[in-house]
Length: 254
Image (cartoon, rainbow, N blue to C red; front, side, top):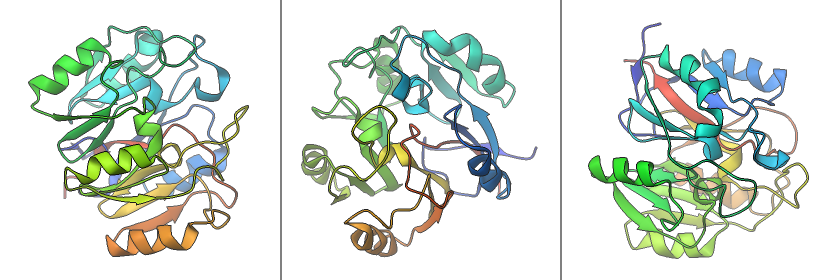
C-alpha cells in the first residue's frame, strides 16, 4: 500500500488510508469508510474501563507524531502488531488505565496544529515527556476528557461544548465554535461528546459517526465548517454515537 505517515497527528493533508476506530462500530460504518478506500484497525476491549469507553481509541492511544504512537499498557499486546505492520513505532505508556475519572484520561489528549490540549495533572508521564521532546506546545485545561470534548476541524479551528476549553484555546489563535452539550449518544451514559463522533479523513474532509440534524446547533456547525472550507461526511443515517474519535494514521503520499 503506497501511503505515508501523517506529518501532524489527527490532521491529514491528503486522503486518509488508515484509521483506528472503536472495535464495536457497525458493519455499515466500516463499509462506508472502506468505500472511500480507508483501511481500519479496530481497538480491542479494555476490561479495566467502564463499558461506555472500553473500546474508545482516544482513551487507549495517542499519536505523538506521525511515526511514534503511545498505547495504554492495558491493550498494548492487542494493538502492537496490527499497528506495527504499517511502519509505526509503538510505545507502551507508563500509566495503566483504571475504571474511573481521572484514572482513565492519561492518553485523552487533543492535538491541534503544534498544540497538545489536556489536563496535564493527569497525563501519562512518558507521553508528556515525548510531547516535550517533540517540542509540542502544551495548553493546560481543566477538562480531562480533552480529545473527547474537541472536534478538530483543522489546524486553527475546533468545535466543543466546553466553554473553558474554548476560552483557553482562543488565546493561542485557535477559532472555537461552542455548541450545546448533549444530543449525542453514548451507551449507558447521559450523552457523548462532539470530539468522540468525529475525525478528519482527508484534507478539509471531516467524518461524523452519524447525522447532526437533531442537534440544536446543526446550522451553526455547518456554517462553521463552511467558513473553514471543511466538508462534512456522515457515515451513518442515524443519531451520532460517541465512538471515541476516528483517528487517522496513514494518508496518500500525493
